[in-house]
Image (cartoon, rainbow, N blue to C red):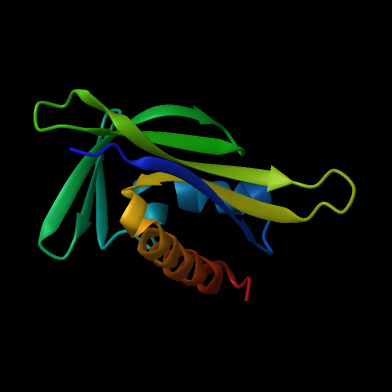
Amino acid sequence: MDSKIRYEIEFPINSSPQLLYQYISTPSGLSEWFADNVNSRGEFFTFIWNDSQEKARLASKKTGEKVKFKWVDDSSKDTEYFFELHILVDELTKDVSLMVVDFADKEEIGEAKQLWENQISDLKHLIGSV
């Protein structure tokens, strides 16, 4: 099995970091734009899309700044892959952007980035940042 490649993409978002953080760190916020449904039990989050579901552990979070989810296997053990959502605020302009760190197979990076663009577009519509 080929290992996946880490990539980062940054999206400018017209929002306060506090509001944005609610949408990236809570099951209710994530289920409005990231997945069809998101459930959490303790540190474990289950992301549901149509008929599939993936489980991740909230590996770290810094209130108002970032969250990192580590994908876990069927026995709830961490895999080497994760995704991180990091809120960046420009010190001078106070412009807010969301940095996404994720992994994909080499031949699927373009598709993965497109998926993130679509999801972030949904997020922007939700918070009125269009």
